[in-house]
Image (cartoon, rainbow, N blue to C red; front, side, top):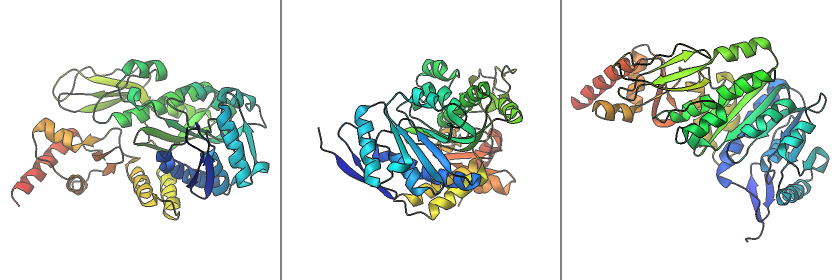
Length: 385
């Protein structure tokens, strides 16, 4: 087994013990998380008590404490004894013992122990291996009204329809395995969270959501307001998709009248849901996160800023995106650049933007028929230049 080693990330250095999990490829996720917490801290303008109940080395939580001015108290926990010892060492090395509590117990027990008034957290960050579903109920008991919940999902395969029955068991939602499955996955997560939160008297306010590499990351603010809960429930529904012609439609409601056949080619439709059909974030909040990253000295700041700016542009556009290569292949059209199609869509009065979900994807309020017409025009223009 390798010896312990040092890691420098953000404004801190930590030690990683043998056998304790540290994923260097999640540094970008942690950079974005720190930036989100900075914006949230300015928004609420108060001292924050933060909990990371699945902390491993403790690096995410410790970065919150060191890099975010508003974080005053930190609770770190891991059920692994080796991780607990590793966290204690990192806390001592950084000289923050007075501000950090470290525990070695089941995450659900820790959260339940902090579920009474006066002990709840302003911020809870769930970063498990796989699905966080088993921790959500406890987290909802331990979060304050107005608090921030950050959640990671690495169970992307079930959410994208590779293991559909697993997704149905875990999230009570049917996924779709198609060209925009990653966005559907994010919407399944938010739809599940909205339903579970409603049973605890919370409405969710999505602030920022993204799917990157092998994981999905969402940030939601929790509100104990009946009107927000009701609004959340009105944002639940289904996506219906035609594999033959790529047409899609959305139906809101818990038990809506879902179409069975495509309105374009009359083929049978596939359906995903129940899921979230509302915005995946707040554009003003996301822009502030992008500005915060721009002012940082993160190693991957340029890439991170580009990602977050793309989120800000796409967040208020309709659900699902169109992947141009998929359309070209389906309709035997020459490949056309994303930039060209976006320019033509906007020139005709449509809203359109790139999507972070796929480099050849676009989000727009134009219909499939509108996009096809524009792609044919662009192909004709290219051939006759």
